[in-house]
Image (cartoon, rainbow, N blue to C red; front, side, top):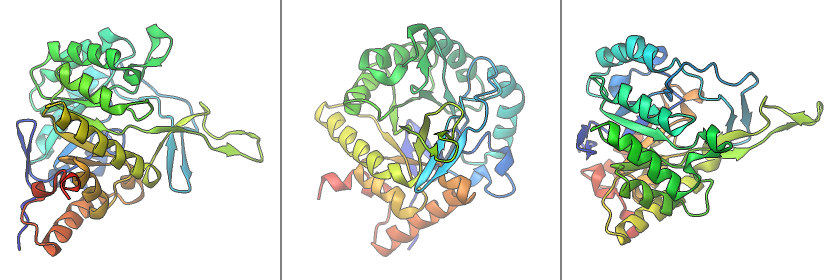
Length: 312
């Protein structure tokens, strides 16, 4: 039985529900011979800021027992280089896959600047707004730390673009559902969750943190139960509030069963992240895994399963 993996979401047709997460797949070109982006539902680019950023000094990645800690520092080529060199390559090679550009700033006006520049470029299907970066003007408080801040940033980006906007939310808050409500009320077309959790690894011989910045963002299998719970909670809260906005599930997804946990919790799309560092074709394996499980269970279309855990 052929399983229909297509998803209509954000006013766009996705050939399957599997995306690759920002910061884990670069700009797609380095994976071309291993995991072509045309096989994906969409590629979410590395975060783009108005100016080029070299990122934090090494060491900035370390493996943990069940995941990875990183403190990359949003290293990226900047909006001008992205538009000149990276986006044309993506447009040429993407096939039926969608291109979602992750954008960020360290002040509110930087969000507006990069959204306006990137959001008007041909070939960009949607923007994912990274609300996990610090507001330097407010003393390095994360933009995603409270609903008022989320509302301001999403409204600002909304005023700059007509493209679909996905607000990427942090789990490092008391009530992530409140952030989702604020984002949707401010004009976000969808929310993606979760971003990484703070963590640290200490070298017991050197008696100091391994990463150059001490703390890093924890990703990988260790965070999947947290991510699934957040998706479940946000799906239910938005439904209760009468808000219609799809959810993109992120965190520890590396196979079909991982992805289906998120879909059953309420995600319409999912993103594969850390698993791509271990198995570069993890996203393709996830697509195949979803199809195999659906086929085994007699499911004809993956969209039948979105939020099914709330109905059983």
